[in-house]
Image 1: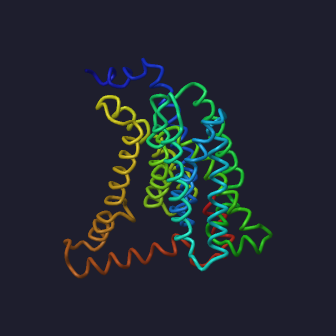
Image 2: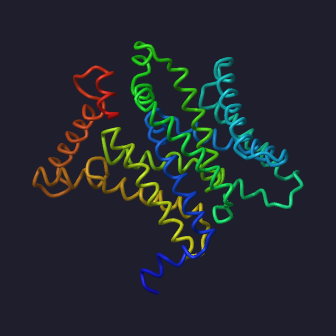
Image 3: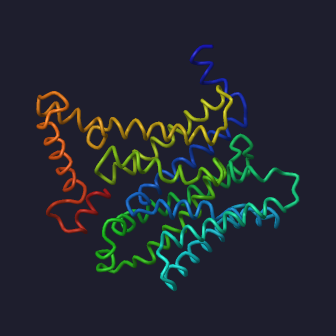
Length: 324
């Protein structure tokens, strides 16, 4: 089979075209949001919201309304419950997140087991990208454009909140409101990705692209371009691999993203494990394994800190520059 046939053969099927469109949109939306999640340190919150929407999706199915309605309601419910447990008890946030999202996720599994249905609701958990309908594609496009639009319009405010919430408050912004807005967008994004890879793998699409881009650049503006580009490429490659290898589509997309992260982790020029050693050896002109090389590597690591956070500019200036 020629390369042209390998590339064009899947496009002969309408369900493959719908899968490609849905996967690319979900990958781009998740990747853009993941840039902020990685910087703020909300990886576990992304996991919580993506799993907590499961009972809402099942109840939406029972009520005959779009999945997005139930998912968004339970996404906000999860965020609210986490805040209540954290603020009214001595339980820390990470424990509150674990309690709320595991309970809601388990409740969703119980609802699936007792809900009479001619449809296999397990695709909500594990994804069913190849079974996407035209209506699902339209829903993903609308929600995806909504999330991307808000993120792009408010990107400066969200970036300032991520880097320096205190300064955001000092110039008249509300960190609490910005945080709530990001959580709301997280709930909507979970719905978009749920259509592609299911509840279980949503968190991977929300975290891996931002983490990969963060290892490749110190500039947040470039990170916002790299993350969705790499994520969309992984979605396309993953779908083609799943078609030709006859594997689970959503899982293959995530495996492709994880494989790319592993390569970047090892070989990124500035932050890769091997990349830093190779760069240090070239600068020092000495073979790997010497004491001088380790010293140069440590110096190179230390030099990255002011590059990321800025060495002389005030917080507002640093964030504005990095967000452009």
